[in-house]
Image (cartoon, rainbow, N blue to C red; front, side, top):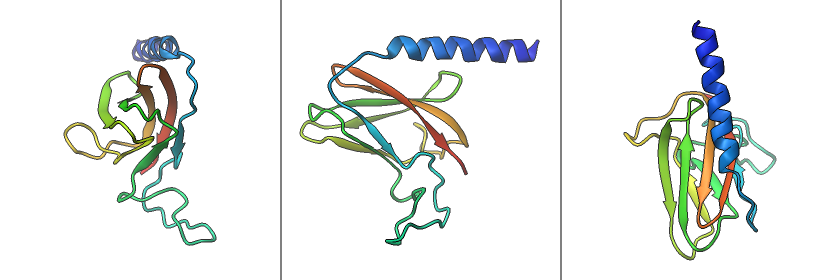
Length: 126
């Protein structure tokens, strides 16, 4: 019975996020994905490949009109809202929930709303 509820929950969450997808004229990039903060893996320039706690997760290619990024966990619960202001086309999420606690490892859904809607997934591995 537990497994059936988990499967139904996953299906309902998937449908919810598919319904949120609306085309718009910009492409949002999320880096790094997966986010493995402070994993000590470096590229040739010495920069962390999977990110750091200090840098967080970068969202680029956002509309310069400002807006909000909504972060949801795999069960569809809102984890965090990240706002960016007029004139900016990037924002960062520090990997924390609304209570400023680091979120657990898992798959998270991000939804950008700024007149249009874009969404995608990010993986966090701790």
